[in-house]
Image (cartoon, rainbow, N blue to C red):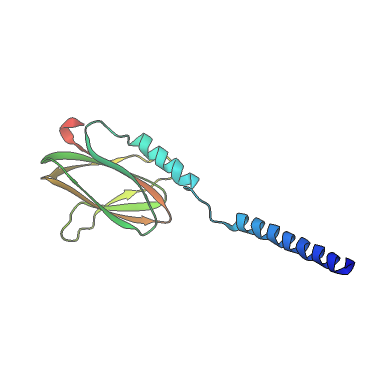
Length: 152
């Protein structure tokens, strides 16, 4: 009996060591959850440099991976609007304001420090359309805001 008991203790001991090693391996190699600290800092910087305004028509902060293309549309009253654009990261964001046809768009340079917002005056009838393409080396934070020119 003593021999069987010794083998059982060794077997359970080895199983325990294997379990602890597996838990340690899992914890060390598990994917990180949450947002990258650089993206979090970029989001805060973008929203500080281009804050929401009470009379804006629309604004948004987006995190874009390299090569991503997305579109945004919002209804507006006809008139002149100021579109402010800002990018934090490396590379550039290409913005197209036409839903039909192919235009080259406007490049918004990204800066990893304190970028200066790019402002454009655009005439709109009843809808604002914007296609955004990330021509960046990695994730970037892009913020935009459209506001009626006379309210600005």
